[in-house]
Image 1 (tube, one colour):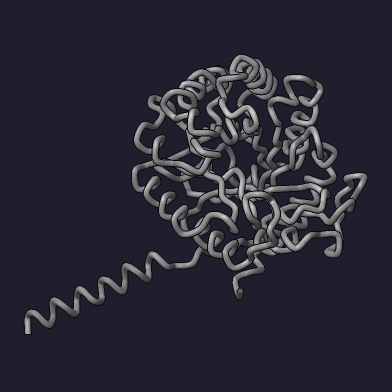
Image 2 (image 1 turned 45 degrees about the vertical axis):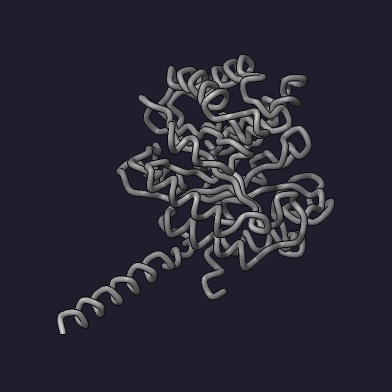
Length: 339
């Protein structure tokens, strides 16, 4: 009898465990309190592994990323960002400044400051993204990064709207966390900290898909540090989600500063089922995210159909949107819970 009872208790506990692990996240909601995201949440902070509001409550911020500002910077304007806030229910905008084009054209800084100024006026959060990718190693332009972040942080000191993403996707096997990415972060973080204690998001190895090294050797002695994880629903699945959970268990705060509904190439169609699995996963853990991306080049991961909104005015009709744009809009508006 005792053995039967023990087995029953074990079975119930096992069912409870798997039910808990499989629990769906809450759908997004549209607030009717009349507050902007920044008015609602204030200066963000990291507590444990959670991104939290000014009062210490965990929050999940969700929104859209620009494409490369040197290609599609025309969309980094108040009209478009306001439309994303009002119609898409976005909390944030990510300004993706590719580093090599910026090195040769410092005028691209205006696209970043336009993004920040619009976000401040609209009460939204803005991710300032130093978009390392083709150069592989963030240390390559680290001196330029120091100047860039010094200029932004000193121009907008203690601005609660700004989230600093200091290294987008370091990549290749020769660029490691211990030898390249962490030393770079330890060079850049003090520059920003002279002016504010805002959230700083640090890139991770292998196109920001490998959380194991930073989980084993995180940055020490700094507050409000988070770590980037990127995924594309048609390429990354269950194994990637397991890695995120393992990193969180080790105490690593995660921010998904870029994800797509497609394969990692940006094409391959929209993977709706897999996208919604990811959305449930992120929502249940209150992991914030920015979707890639706002452009009209006609790629599957883009929001707009080819050549729609040529003047970047916002006010898009549903027929202007790619399948990915339609799906992400539904997600942001909390309209996918019955899927």
